[in-house]
Length: 75
Image (tube, rainbow, N blue to C red):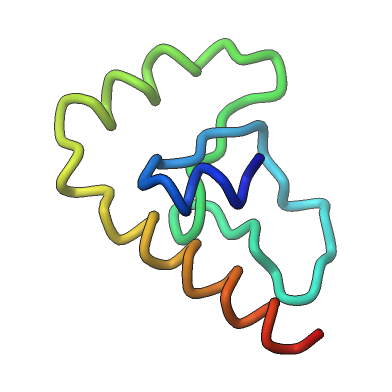
């Protein structure tokens, strides 16, 4: 569903994925998604930040789309 979020223009928020090693690396915090804590204790804060200034986060959607598109081209 991560790809769906980008395709439909949503900013992806999910628990920190820094321990994941993928090619291409589609999980870059503040580049292709917004990381939250694994216990979701900061989820509300993250959502409110994005909703309060959604235009500031449009680059995340665009970066995620580019990463997924680049990854698909490599297969």
